[in-house]
Length: 304
Image (cartoon, rainbow, N blue to C red):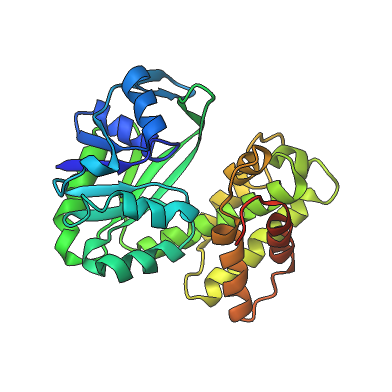
């Protein structure tokens, strides 16, 4: 299987490097500055357990050809249109595996490529790029979930999961990727909403008199929206989320807060805004979620 990975950030860089180290045929398509950096210094992965560097093949957009069986898409949600333009030379064949936050990207990709070309994927990882260009994993969580969505790429999905099994991260083949996406979205909207609204870590928030209750309230709003949209978050997923979201002493924050503090564009429209819009459309009261979104809409440097 020939794999093309778009981007070498916290998601694409991490999982692409892990797959490459496990023996997979992985090529990255990168923008000029990042491509030069990776070619010269390698792609370095740092984690609580280990650090390593790989030197993957890196191409620019103009060098691409339709030679890949699987194209992993891991841009920020607001960069999806530019990302698709950058892989135009490769996207005439092969399945696309999007690993974006939120849910709206699925409909866009189905419309452009057809459902039979678009697999379902969810990445669970907290990672960031350091000042030196290394990908640093911030917690023990690092997993990929994949589902074919169409019979045409069921065999490819299973082959990919077999490759993942040989790499040093968690992976699973799911039978309902939309539910997995909703489960993650409800968690992420809560984490992003609370940490950006309060400008602090989970531990700092829950150390205040009302913090833990507000975290649970925001998560309940997101779960109510998911349920009204026919993707109710089950008790097991809620239990895992509520073990992390109000955890005392936790240093966890959302990448949205890190991006905001760095003066970079954020995914607030795709994670918070879209959740609010779906909630309002379904008649779900989501005042705290709307407050978090409004705060980001005011402070974020990128226009809607």
